[in-house]
Image (cartoon, rainbow, N blue to C red):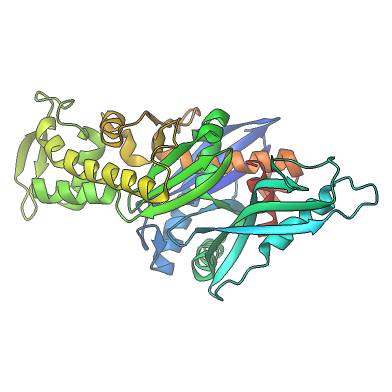
Length: 409
């Protein structure tokens, strides 16, 4: 194949580690390679074993490399978890220019002022994101550049993360022989492919039903305003199936993927399959309806916890766009319908529009690639793989996250 410019994403999940290669073509990108490996060393979205995680990353990257025929030297890495927090902040500065016109320098200074806040030593500021600017008391301004004023204020929130968790992710990727081109906040990356501009503006909950955990993120007025992690996901469904059908976990996972249905009413009594019992090789026949009777209660519990989390965040009545869900569990038959019933709101299941990754479980990985392309087109500060070699074009890791987050202001 002709060698072009490639952007690589690395989605380190509880059940799967995925490396996705995108080829840039002007202002768009095509997914040309996908590598995956079973997630080892990760529990509930957090790294618990460095060596096993490194091995999983290497397997996923090797798989992707063999598919495309290139050497991956650097990748954009998604990061999420219950250590990510949003904290409100406020900054104020005097406009510096003599003609009192607000410029880029004034915006940089007021955002830096918003960073001045006491944080515990174990936490690290990833970025500060403006919710609104205030010019001489006039509120609701999203972009004050070019306006005249004396006093510039910003209502913002700080995105912070655990210093240990962030550095462990970077360490695992680097030990696998991959340079971290940038860290990408997973809800922000996923929103690039899962949400429309109107959904982000009007108010929407983006829910990632992963294997080890379920992340809930709320977008309003174009920005991320709240995020939370529920320590329950698809692995709990698999565990219930293993117990209910008395089979091994690996077999239960295969049954879930091939025959899973989230709602008993939508399940078929005529679809039958055999499952080997644990401890011997005797196979027992079950119907999809019997399987659904195991799956539905756990899925109902997950969606119920999502609704409670939204209530706790104070947005239960402020989501005109409803819920957009993604993650491996949402590929199950009738998962969207059950979610709509339990959440009592409109529900849409997000699926990437790229050949080979049209599955809700690929939203994060494709979203990271979309972030990289958008960042490149906006600031020309990306790490890409050109003919198998990394090309660095400046900018620190967290400064580049800053450019990405501002796209949503």
